[in-house]
Image (tube, rainbow, N blue to C red):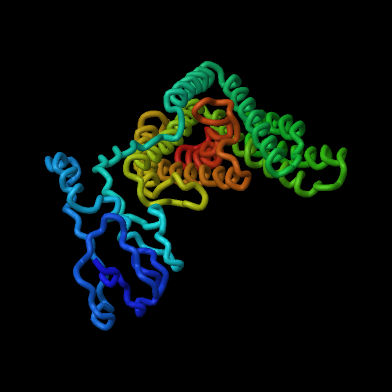
Length: 387
């Protein structure tokens, strides 16, 4: 067979189809079969040799046994694949990994099982700690009132310690703990003994002691330190004083129990309904976990509990007063929780402490109780009096 059978027209403008130099005779690929007699250059501008290959059997078919015989009568599969490998601009065949072959379809993967919602805390530990705290509170509340006042004072001191520690660690704010702790405990006792007048006097003296105590250190940061100290004195012990003031009434233990029950029921209703049905965020920039559905649950649970408590636990109380009380408790507890979340987000922390497993710190349990205490005290005074 003459060389003209394999000649490539110069008008192809590139190296020969099988790697020959431009303008020279092309060399056939090994094992390739010529397509036929040569044509003149004008007629061959759109032609190229096409090797004849047998059809490849499908993967895993019964034709695998005949594949060897078919390959003996024609070019191999690798030769056929090499004939159609794309060429680089220099006329060289590109490696196989640069050809971007069509990926094989992945096997059918089962859809992942839907994940269950997580509470985000150790519920068993949280329930155990909550029950333990409830037993201590109820026992001290109905055994001897002064013991419960001591429980409030201890909670206030621990809460002040957590708050001032986080301020020092995260913001380098040195609110003086000693005058705050002493003044806070005195504030609770003064509220129980002398009422609102005693609480206000103790608050003023605590603020003054904070200003003087901070003078023993360098003046840098004095303003922010004493400002944080006065805020801590108002936020923790002064608001807690209203719980001690509730206790002074003849049915004081039942008033305090109503206050605690309504707050806990409001938080529980918000958590249960929000966890199960919550979709619309209530305040995503402050507390992403709170939902509007949870707020509805808090209001509903608190109003029902308020009607029952006012009807059966408070002297001269009525069910409709309980509905109003429950609505007010749900609102104040939610605002208190959001306020605490605002503080923690500013400090860049999740919990104020780790003293209570499953709950965080003392301040993480007082967040909704503290702002609710003056609301409940005021409404009970309006509904049934202070005696």
